[in-house]
Image (cartoon, rainbow, N blue to C red; front, side, top):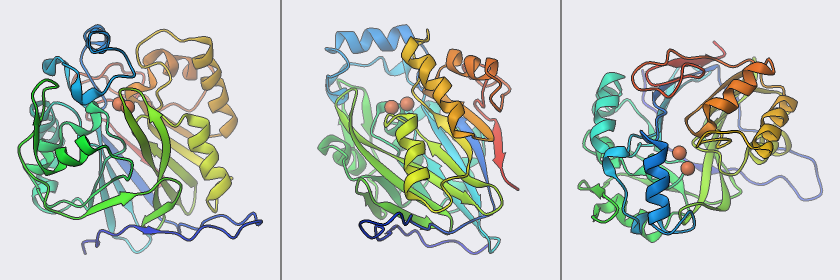
Length: 331
Ligand SMILES: [Fe+2]
Ligand SMILES: [Fe+2]
C-alpha cells in the first residue's frame, strides 16, 4: 500500500457573508482501535494529587503526580480513502510510558510504528494522560510526524525535544526528530481526502490551552466526529461540523472522550449534556475515556445507539468501547 505524505493544509475560510461551508472531501470508512481509554487507574488518587497540587487551575507540569496511577488515552484511527489507500493516525500518546508500551504491543500498533505504517501522531491536547506517554511512541519511531494544537505551552514544546520534569514524573528521553504540524485554532486543517483536524481555543483545567479534534467525512454515511477529551464541549464540537463543514447536516458517528462525568456521579448539567447529545442524531456513539460510565449508562437508558465493549484489559466498564476493542464506522 502506498504510504501517504504527511500534510496539513489549512483550508481557506468561506467568504464572509455567505453560508458556504468548507469541503474536506470524502472517504469510505474508518476503523478505530482503542489502545487504551483508561486515563488513570484510580479517581481518588488523581483527585488527591490535584488538590495537593493547588487545584484544577494549577500547572500540571509543576504538580507532584503518583506516576503509578497513570495509564493513558490513545487510539488508532485507520481511514480507508476513496482510492483504497489507508491513512493511519495515532490519536494521543497516553500517560505512563511503560503502560503505553504494553498497550502498543498488545494491539500490534508497536510494529506499525516501527514499520512506518502510521502516517501521523495527533496530540489532541496537552493533558498528562494524552501527552506524557510520548516516549513510548518515540522509542519506536522518533521521526513520526506530529500534529498538535498551536496553543502548546513552552513546557509541552520542551517535552517534545526531550525533558525530565522530576516533580511531575513526566519524562521523555527521546527527542522528536520528525515534522511538527502546529494547528492554529479555528482553521480547518486538511490531513487527507475526507479527513480534517480543527483546534478549539479555550483554557482547560490544569493550566493548559486548546484541544484539537478530528472530522472524517464518509461518502455514504456522513461525518464521524473523533475526540480526545472534548474539553471544548460536545455542542461546540458538533456545531462546528454542522455549521462549517460541507455535509455537516449529516452527523453519523461519535468516538472518544466527552468529558461529561469523568469522576463519577452525574450532575444536572451532565444529564443535560447527555440529553442534548440526542438532538444531533448520531447513528453510532462510541464514547469512552472521560465520558464517564454513568453518562454512557444514561445514553443507553435514553436509547442512543451506543456501541458497547468487552470490558477487558483494564477497561473502566463494558458499557463502552474499551482497551483493545474496535469500532467501525461505514464500510
Ligand atoms: Fe483525558
Ligand atoms: Fe483532558
